[in-house]
Image (cartoon, rainbow, N blue to C red; front, side):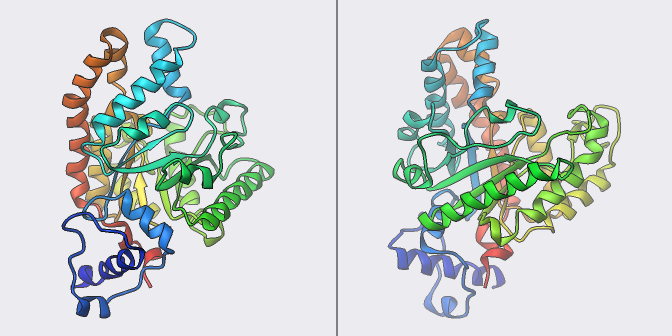
Length: 369
């Protein structure tokens, strides 16, 4: 009954908006609604989040907003400095058309991904607002937005939600972090003005001269993730959903298949770190894949489930499609489409299997009255 009580406000909200829930979703009667708990969302934000979630209210979304990274991957396979823009557009269109058959939504960019928004099988759409490449413009990783775009224009382009990425570490100089916090606040205010759901992604980085794939950074990572979880959950930022890293590096977790031989945390310590990080926010959280392989991403999610944390889905990126890049370059679009419909689909379905243990976004504490 407790879980049932948490559903009715969303059904009621959909009725107010004139939005039809997906088939089979939230079949509740009036008495259940009257006993229920209100969801603390405006109509536009509620509609947007419902659009990108599955029939259970879990955000099972794919991510294909990579621009600079995809350019590098294609260029490496082609043996050129810069791949043709047409290849970027076609690759995104094919990935979107195939993987959205198995996902609740997809994240795309406006630079190369807009044509793909017409090929997403009626699923939800998130659009990235940040400019690609700012992350390599300097050691401070100061963020910037895509020129010529606003939250209103992203909504007009068909977005149900917007996503913004900020690189952040509490170990950075204070003047840098204050600029980043103000930037995140401004976007939150803009999303409130347009009544658009705001997915905030934060990624840690090194300022100590450590290898971000190394042991020292692996030991420091939980502190970075924990700080960001707590800080960016504050109402002043206006984020509705946090897109987060796992608070550990799987290669340093003993007792896992991904373990590389050097321990930063035992399996039990890793599970405790998952719980600690998740407890620092009342927002819905979705995990990102952070460029690991599909198998490692699935094992990461399994460890999160084993730890007992409540998370609300994924926005998984290249883990599901990156092995299709050499197929595409070597054999063309038809071969990529075949790979996506077979191995790519299996990658997404493996993630979906673990997501059976995820919770609906509307059960997060920030959503409940």
